[in-house]
Image (cartoon, rainbow, N blue to C red; front, side, top):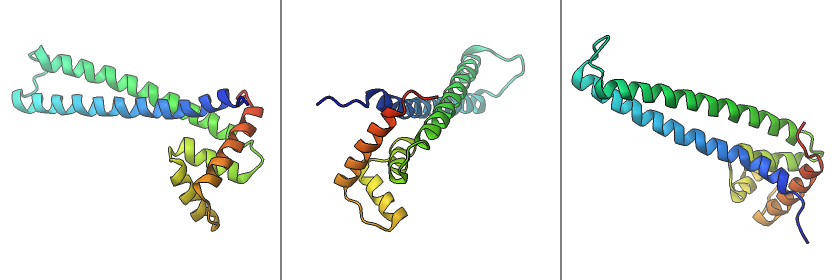
Length: 146
């Protein structure tokens, strides 16, 4: 039997992809900032300056920061759409499972622990897997995002 929640799952997983890109860009910005700081302390900063490597690094830093800001904006927009979509689900546990899994980036075993903590009822990974599958199927019925 073919599962019918592909487009819903893809939309949910897109949050993870954008979050991964944001993390990669942040690491890149931090690395360039460290190189700029090192170059500035080594050679000093002169307005109108010496150009060279430090000028190129500063330009690269500005470009990466702009790219990072754009990715962060896209992430916030996608998270807002996904949150509104998840809020349409009729069962609170479905909403919790999808939020923990896709918005908080938890593995299903972590979702089981968090749902157990939040509800006071013990949940196995198998139960979370089932709830996850049901939630995705219900979310697919609400597709597309509005």
